[in-house]
Amino acid sequence: MTGIATRETLSAEELQRRFYGLDKSALERIVEDVMTEEFSVVDGGILENFEEAAAGFLGSRHSVAVSNGTAALHLALFAMDLGPGDEVIIPSYAYYAAPLAVCLLGATPVFCDVRADDLTIDLEDAERVRTARTRAMIVHQPHGYPADAESLRAYADANDLKIIADAAQAHGATWQGQPLGHFYDYVCSSFGKGKLISGGELGVVTASEDRCRDRMLLYGHVNRVPSALLTDEYRHIDNAIGVKYRPHPFALALALEQMQSYEQRLARLVAGVEDFERELENVPGVSLFRAQADAGRVYWRFPVKLDEGGLDPAEVARRLQERGCPVTSNPRILAHRHNVVTGYYGVETNREFPVAEQLVQNMLHIDAYALYQDGAAERILQAFKDVMAG
Image (cartoon, rainbow, N blue to C red; front, side, top):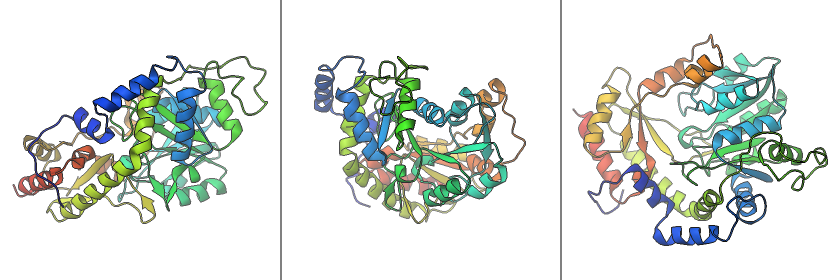
C-alpha cells in the first residue's frame, strides 16, 4: 500500500464529500444548472437527462427517478401487479424497507437466510420457503457484494418469478462484467445520504419492459400521465393514481454530476480497499467476506468478521475508534425482526436464520470512504494490529 501518511481526522460527511468530488466550484456549477430549471420538473431537462444516464448506468432500457430508494422498491412491486395473497422472498439480512414496500401493497414478505461467505441471498434456503403464492424475490447486494445474478435469473425463469435487485449499497456492481439490469427485471437503488452516489435524498428504479415503466409513472409521477406514457393501456387516465414520488432537481443534478465521474473514483477506491484487504486478512482474530468469482463488487461499507468466541466486537470497535478509525459494531436488526414488520404489519416468521444471526453478532463495519484518503489504509491497518494483539 502506498500513500502519504496524514493525521487528518474527517467526519463521515467530509469523507463522503471528498469521494463525491463536491468541492465549492462543483457545487456552484450544479446550483447554476439547477436554477435554469423549474423547481418541480415534470418532464424533460434534468429529469430526462438523469433517467437516461441511470438506465445506462444500471443496464436497463428505462429508469424512473423517485424521491428515495424505498419509493423505488414500492414502484417496482406495483409495476408487477403485486397485491394481497402474493408473497415475496427477501433475505433476513436486508434493510427493513424491502419488506415494508411489500407490506404497503398488501402482500406478504417471506424471509430466507444468507450465504456465510458474502451475506447475499441463500438460493437453496429461498427454495425452502417458496410456495405457489410466491411472485418475486427482492435480492440485496449487501455492502457492495453482488448476489449470483446468473443463477437467480435461471431460478426465476424456471419458477415464473420476478427478481428485483436492491442495489442501494452497490452502485456500479456487476456480474460477469454485466451491470445488474442485464439480469434483473428491476434494479432499485437509493442515491440517498451516504451512498456511493448521492443526491442527498433520491432513488431510481429501472425496467426494460415498456408497460412496467408506464405503471411506475402511473403510480408515482403526477403530471407525467398520460403524456409521457409509452403504451396505450393507461392513456385514458388523466394523472397519477398513487403517491407523488417526484424527485427534486437539485438531487438529480447532484447525483448526475457524480455518476458521470464515478468510474474513475470507484476504480481508485476499489484498488485501495483491495490492497487493504490483502493486508488485513493476515491479522489474527479477523476474517473477511469473499465476493463470488463472477462478482464485480464495489465498496460501500467494508464488513469484517471477528472470530467467534474471541474479543468482544463492541470493545474492539471502541478501541479502534479511540485510534481514529471509522469503525462501527452495532448489530444489525434483521429484517424479519424489525418492529415495523412484526409489530405494525403483523408479519410472523416461525423460522431460524442461523447464518445471518451469527454473522451480525461478530461483525465490524469500516467506512470505505475513509480508505479513499492517502495514508488512511496504513493507519487503520496498524490500529487493527494493535487492538487485536491486545
